[in-house]
Image (cartoon, rainbow, N blue to C red; front, side, top):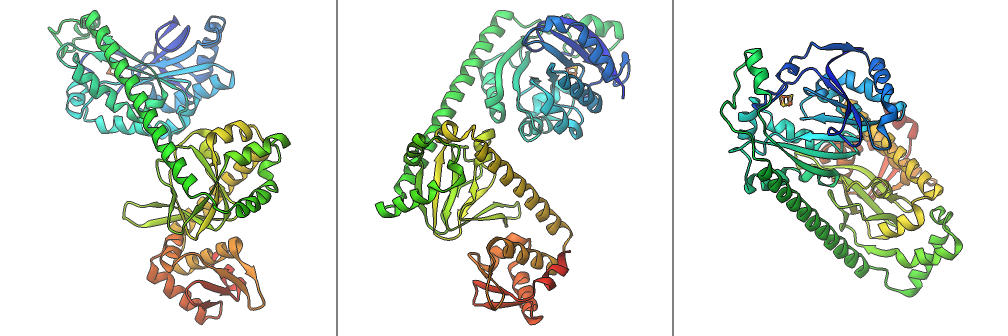
Length: 500
Ligand code: SF4
């Protein structure tokens, strides 16, 4: 594995926190009008280095890095050499280096999910704030791709901090309105942004263009006034802080409203409450909570009655609560682009949802809706952080649950992608046998909380198809149908033969 390195700066102080070694890599698909490194644009050239060479070189200056400093990859566009950057970051991280990537978001997307988890600081160059200016400035119709990069940072595993940079060119973005647009496009990454910097356009790169014989598109444009650029940088930062404040206030308002609504639905009778507390005390969840704190936990949780059909949480909800189903059943689903409902899981007594969201602070990506009347124990984030965050029992349960969900999702993908209707129906019945099956003399009894339509949504089939398939299985003697809500599985081996 080799990469093309245009140049190396040691003891750099501007491109990332602390003192850093900066590797400027070759290659960039953009053609920014103000680019002062036109000699880095070619994909091939400069010095050929291996990831081991990079590690060795960085090691020479390690003693200067201190607590904050480390290694930065800049360019050009470093993400264009995706495999090389990934291999370098992997080695550097194994050796405990602080890492930074300075990017415009135009690399090879195939490597993003491998590179981004290894990056501590991302310096994000924001070229322009709308499609047309982006194209005018870079000669590329890439604004949507850029927004996509921004939107997917979290999903690609980036969990570090972001420094946002914008080169301000006189007459293009040197006004308040542009700063407002600038702050608006940062919305998806707001919580990760650590600083916003305006770099005043300068003309020191023009000479290189003349030497290389390349036409310079900003010929005649004066350098950006530094004082004005600073004023606008302060304006942008203030705007950003205000948006953050408003967002937090809105989030707090939603949280309080939800808390109020859950409280209103709280289990009414004292006796019922006492019974639930008694049962809760037996749960492994409370194993690591000190005896004297158990009472406090029970006082802080909300014991909510949720009616069948009510939403418990929805996509985008902040990770403010974890839900433990005390009684009843809940479905977790998304609405697909075709307007169909895709059910992922059915949860019932003793299951919980939201633990991972609280741990990694990511909003809910699914919808949770009560299938039957439910009693749900709602654990607020503050209670979770205080009593459960460091509990091995809780962490283990979250891990086990997450693993079960991954397995479940994998099976679902396989079922949806590869199975025919008989296989999907048999697979669904077997899943239900595992989850809710009760052995009886006539067979394994499944008391369903779902309609035929929901069964279809769960298995990736249309309502008519699942109804027809269940009819066929009945004819074959595999199952018996008792009304709309009970299925008795008579021949489990026959069902298994469809999926094994
Ligand atoms: S992204 Fe950077 S290296 Fe690429 S053209 Fe623009 S300024 Fe030059």
